[in-house]
Length: 613
Ligand code: GCB
Image 1 (cartoon, rainbow, N blue to C red):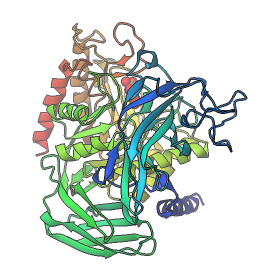
Image 2: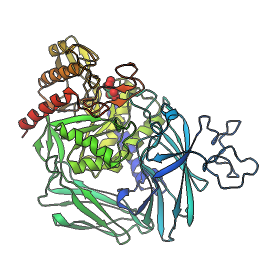
Image 3: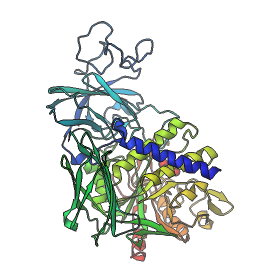
């Protein structure tokens, strides 16, 4: 009975997703694939802002929202109309300070460091809209809730701090000057994703690029070109057109590989395809080969850089292009330690990935939420495999259907955005979610959705362990639905001591590759003491050495991502001397100095590399 029910649920999810993907008015599901590869204008730069803790620009004195009142007046979104009766006059964007966008607000003004609430942001820009084009306002990410207005008219709202969204603005742009206003609100709520309690800084604002894209009337909205699951000789994918001209013939051209295929889209604008291919120069960390892939319809054309590789598991092995690999990884947050704040652009991102490469990593866990598209594209280019995650973290409201829908939307938007990235091999549906029946159902549904949307990658989650005597037991029932056995274990830090941890054995109930998602210890960079003194680099270093001894005893061990590449800011980390709002589990300090353990991890990875040659 239960099985039958879940079968119907899966079919239902499939139908809902199919409708969502194909329904043209569903703006947030029809994200434009490869936005950076399209004609666009950047609206980044300095945006004026108004701090509005009481949400004066949104609620009137009876606390009724007035941003969509019949008169269209009131609200901070509209500073152009004459200030007649009923309209709010106690603000002025032009005289307000400005901040850099993309950029979190917390690190741009001292009084905003701990701010959680609403800030209004405005940018002016020029446009010259053409009658035969379509226009889209695209946001890489706004944390957490965004209300967006163009020239005083509301375009819509979006929730979720790490995924892109867009609004069609065709017919709404003025020739000459336009202005866009965003009400960004980073307040935390129990029923949201993530929820109120996280171990990272709740950076607010427009943290990623804002673009105005210009598309032909009928355009290539989305596409996927990847190898079929476990098949190095078969290309698979789809092209989705949007606009009036839905039936078109499409050429998929990969000149360097001698591939040229023509497919025809159906009445819904979709063409799915698969075709046999001859040998390719396959993508791997050692050989991050990207091909120029050109997709051309009569009305539109887009070029992407795509790598081709297969990823699958077989028993306890992870096979990349058919060959068993060991994932030499590291976790990272989307945060720059040197100039604290969200990573501001490609330079910051390259620095982070370069550090991982210096440690001889071939893999990174982009914790605990979607990182930017640029980061994942860099991983493609630099040859780093990626674990990509959604912020289903700790204590989610498992019984709230709207919370589930939100989690599923964030997952599907992440997967839509990054499905052509060869670096991404794992979709993670969450981190350290405590076992209970409602949670198992929620997470089970998310796992099924991930599989439905992409059968070519692995589905995983960072699970929890429990201890029984000297056994570390991994038996979370969710493990049945995942491809990897991944768990966070903090032996030597949150339990046991660096010495006693060596007495523990792992009791893992699943015959799958074991890829440990977290372990580590806090160390204040430059603080030296004996190996038994917590917070010292020596303590952290010994912990890593003993972890490697303990973990290599697990027969199915196929990788790990210790916690974490660099120290990061967290309001939960209160020790005034050692932490001061920093989680110190980084292998690199917030000044960019490598701690002792960095080199220990590197030499362990050097060994593992030789073993898996
Ligand atoms: C964890 C969490 C991570 C924390 C880390 C810690 O298990 O997944 O977000 O930052 O532990 O430092 O305690």
